[in-house]
Length: 111
Image 1: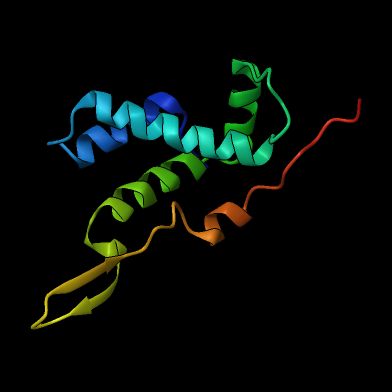
Image 2: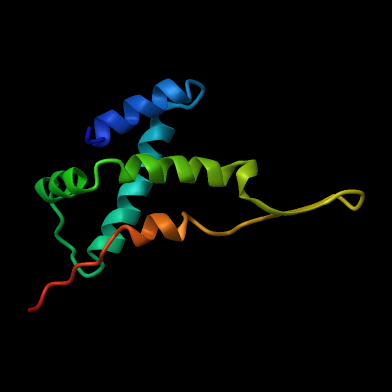
């Protein structure tokens, strides 16, 4: 299975969403990676690039799928309620799906 690291994710989304600025795609990746790392290592402050690379090999498409969910949540797929004549639209406030979050098992160090 192909691993989608930072560069692969950025290129994939730039091709898929040509109208998006590169900086916005970088921000999406950073948001996805932050969600992953904060869930996987909630008590670790010193996360280096080698650890990130190792984790992305274990979870090769996680950031890519998270980025897609973040984009979807920004659009109409985030609507959980709709009304017709009184025109009322309600959006879900969730960040990403619980299913995606459940794929990450938290790790804590014993000191």
